[in-house]
Length: 323
Ligand SMILES: Nc1nc2c(ncn2[C@@H]2O[C@H](COP(=O)(O)OP(=O)(O)OP(=O)(O)O)[C@@H](O)[C@H]2O)c(=O)[nH]1
Ligand SMILES: [Mg+2]
View 1: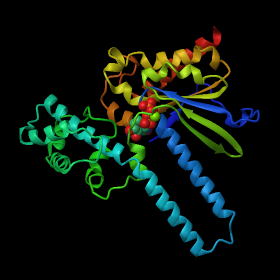
View 2: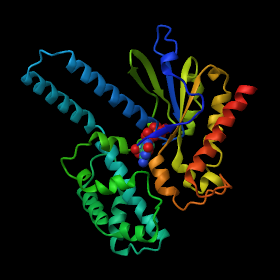
View 3: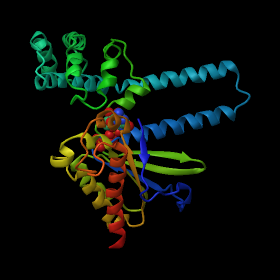
View 4: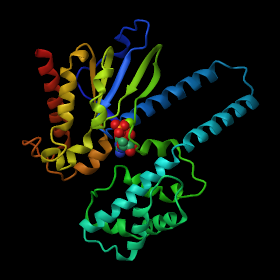
């Protein structure tokens, strides 16, 4: 989980004027680019820092008090994480459901597990998983079908982070399952509405606002542009390893959205921070991928591809600055 910053409009946060209110940092990007994940990571780092600072400020705290307060925070974390059970189970279902299609593409015989796939396809996941679904999910997970597909093709078109869900299937299917922080970071549920968190960096406070990347929500983004100090734009690098990035539904999508942002009159005074995310997925999927369309002079060098991509985004920003 991580992203690397580009050279486009780096903004030293400490230089942003406070004007009494916390400066607004907008986190934007396409659906699933990793905005919530980034916000969650920032939030948990900030919480850990303030918890450490609070502990350091109370030297008179006895061992018994410390033990009691850490037990309380463990209980409240477990209660908070319980809300994510449904999301995690839903993500797990999606992974194993998608395997049927991958098997069909790769001509792997699923007939022995046809009934189990039917069970999970027909299930409408509104409440708890039924016993039948538990059984079928476990049967498919142990079937060896995934391993057979992996022998035929290294990169499978399964949901993002499927490795994690495959590895943790048994634990997630356990009746007393409670999601961990890592589970939540690897899970995906589209943001609805806006995700707003105050964060503190050093002595300064910032208001971090994530807006959903779904196209219906993107139309509403401009209502939140006024007085933005920094716009943090996330790019899902793994898109580069999909054919649709060059000639399908992803063509020019992310660059086009970024272009509209840099040209928007309400964002002319905002600093832009471009973050290339999902580098791990990019590294996994890029080996052997033909990048000739993006970097004709060095088709197989992932690093060159990143530099080319950075240039594409930077040129949009420069063009907006000169008009
Ligand atoms: N492998 C990998 N997965 C990531 C990374 N960052 C985010 N993800 C995963 O990508 C999926 C989508 O992440 P989110 O942060 O929910 O995406 P989002 O941009 O908030 O999406 P919307 O709210 O729908 O606009 C989740 O399953 C994350 O775990 C990363 O660096 N590497
Ligand atoms: Mg989100």
